[in-house]
Amino acid sequence: MNIHEYQAKELLAKFGIAVPAGHAALNAEEAVAAARQLPGPLYVVKAQIHAGGRGKGKFAELPADAKGGVRLAKSIEEVEANAREMLGNTLVTIQTGAAGKQVNRLYITDGVDIAKEYYLSMLVDRKSGRIAMIVSTEGGMDIETVAHDTPEKITTIVIDPATGFMPHHGRSVAFALKLSGDLAKAAQKLSAQLYEAFKALDCAMIEINPLVETMDGRLLVLDAKMSFDSNALYRHPDVEALRDETEEDPMEIEASKHDLAYIKLDGDIGCMVNGAGLAMATMDIIKLNGAFPANFLDVGGGASKEKVTAAFKIILSDPAVKGILVNIFGGIMRCDIIAEGIVAAAKDVNLSVPLVVRLEGTNVQLGKDILANSGLPIIPADDLGDAAKKIVAEVKQAA
Image (cartoon, rainbow, N blue to C red):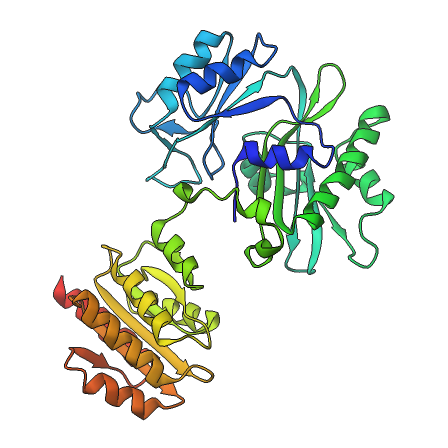
C-alpha cells in the first residue's frame, strides 16, 4: 500500500525526523489557509499523487510550457493561482504513463534554502533478504538517470537482522554522503530513525528524495515516499486508514475486497490462474503466441466458488478484455469448484467474449463435465500451449 507525501512526512515526524512545515489542501481555499499558517515568504505547492517525477511532469489539460507538479510561489496569491490551475487536472509523469493521474489534493510547504541535495532510501533487498539503505550524493529529480548512467555514485548498505541497525551503519551513510562534523552526526541519527520507522511500521520502502542540506547547516527531508507490506496492515489500522482509493485502479480495489491478487495490465486477454508462478507462465505463453495479457490474477490455492465468481466478474469488467484464458492446476484447488464459479459468473454477466479453459488436477473430469454441460460456448484445452494458441486465435478472429 502506498500513501501520499504529506502522510509519509507526518508518520516520519512521529519518529523525530525533521521535515519542513506543511499542510494538505483539497481546494484552493484550503491551500490559501495552509499558506497563511506558514512563515513564508516562499512557499511550495506540490501535487499529491502516487507517482514520482512530479517536478518534471506536465499537465495534460494545460499548455506544454506550463509548470509541473511541484511549484514555487512567492506570495499567497501565487499559491492560490497555482492551486486553482493544478487541482482537477491530470498530471503526466515518467511513472504515471500516458494516462497520468488526476490531482485531487495538494501539499503546501514552507520554502527551504537548499545548499545540497542527497538521496536516501530504505527497502527490502530481495537478493540478501535483508533491509538495505540506498545512498547517493546525487539526489533530486534526476536520480533515475544517475542510477542508469553512473551507478558507481550509489552506495548500498545492507543491515543484518540479527544485529539490527548499528552505529557503523550510520557512519557508512554519512561517509557515502561525504558529510562531516555536525552534518555527519545528523545523518547517522536520521539513518537510525528511518530504520526504526521502517521496522515499526512494516514498511516495504521509504524513499527520501531529496534529503537536503540547508544553507544554515541542517538536514531536512524535503520529499518522502512510503509503501507498506499489505500483509501486515492488520497490525497498523492507523496506517491502513491513510489509504487513498482514488489513486488505485477500481478493479484492483474490488479484487482486494475478495482477497484476490490482481494487477491490471495493458493487453486484451484476461487471465484467471491459481498460483503466482503458473500465472506468470500463462502470461508468458500468451505473449509467446503474439498477444498480450490484460491482467495478472491469482485466485489462490483454496478459493471458493464465490471467490472464483468474483474473479471472473472483475476480468469481464475490463472493457479492454477481448477474450479470457482460465488456467487451473487443481492441487488444493478443486477443478469442479473452479468450473462452478466460471459457469455462475458467465451466466450472471452474459458472457460475450471467447473463453478458453484448461483444467488439470483434482476432480478434473468432474470440472470438465460441468463446463461441457453448462450450455455456454466454453472452449476446452488439453494443455497450456493448446490453451494459449486457442485463445489468441479466437481473439484475432473476433477482431
